[in-house]
Image (tube, rainbow, N blue to C red; front, top):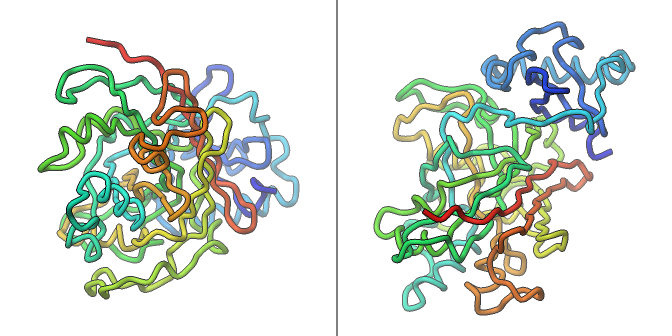
Length: 365
C-alpha cells in the first residue's frame, strides 16, 4: 500500500470547519493523533511544535503509532480522507531554493548564454541557491494567480512555468554560528514542491542578483510530509562529483534518494524526472546553507531546484526549449485554467503524495 504502515506521512487537517490539527495518513484515512496518543502537541495547527522536539521524539512517536495501528487500536481515530480539509502542514520559517540538477542548469545555460559555457565556474564547487519568500508557500490544491510584472513592459507573465522539485523540512534548529550536525538530526521529512516561475519576468530581472519577483509569487508544497525514516529503502549514494567537493561538502552518508517523479499537465503525463540523478544531495545543501554561521529554524524549508534528466526535464521551458518545440497540445507555457500535478514514488511503491495547482487569470493593475 502506498500509504501503509511503512509510510505514515504527517499532515494538518480539519473536519467540518473545526480547528486544524495534526494527523498521519493511512490508506484513504487520516489518523487523528491527539486522541490516539494522548498528546496535545498534535492539537496544534502546524507540525512545528512536534518537530521542535527533535529526532528522538520523531522516531519514538513513529514507532508507537505503527504499533497502535498494527494492532487496530487506532481504528476509532480514523477519519475518511474525503471528509477532511488539508492545510499547509508547516509554518514555514525561511525558504531556500537550490539549483542542484546538472541537466537543468546546463539546459538553461545553453538557452540563455549560447555563446558561453553552459555552467558558471562555481557550479560544480558548491550547491548554488537563493533565498525565496516563505510567506507565499501554499499547500497543494491552492489556485495560483498568474503574476504580473516588468518584462520590461508591464503586464501578465506570458511564460508561466513549473518547476518539479523535492523539498526538505527542518525540524530541529541551530543557533547563529552553531554548525549543523548530521542531516537526519535536523531534517524531519520530505515534501513535493512546485516552484512556479514567471520566466519572462525572471529573464529580465535576474541579472546581476538572481531570481526575485519571477519566483516569489507562489510556491506550492504537498500536504503530506514524508518522514525521513520512511525513506530508508530509497537512499542511494548520490551522483559522482568532479572536482571533489571541499571537506565541509563531503558526503558522510548516503542521502541521495531514488524518487520517480511524474508531472501531469491537465491529466496528461509530460515528464518523468528521476530525483536520484541530482548532482547535489540534500545533506550537501544543508551543509552549504549553514557553513557561514547561518542558523536553522524549525519550519525552514529548502528545495532541490528543478529535477531534470537528459530526457525528462521538470520544467516547461526545457520541455519546449523556451517555446521552440511546443508540446503536442501546441502550448509552450502554462495557460489560464491549466492544472499541474506532480507526484513521486519510491522503488517499493511508497507515495510522497502530490502537489497540484490550477492557474487563474492575472488581475491586471
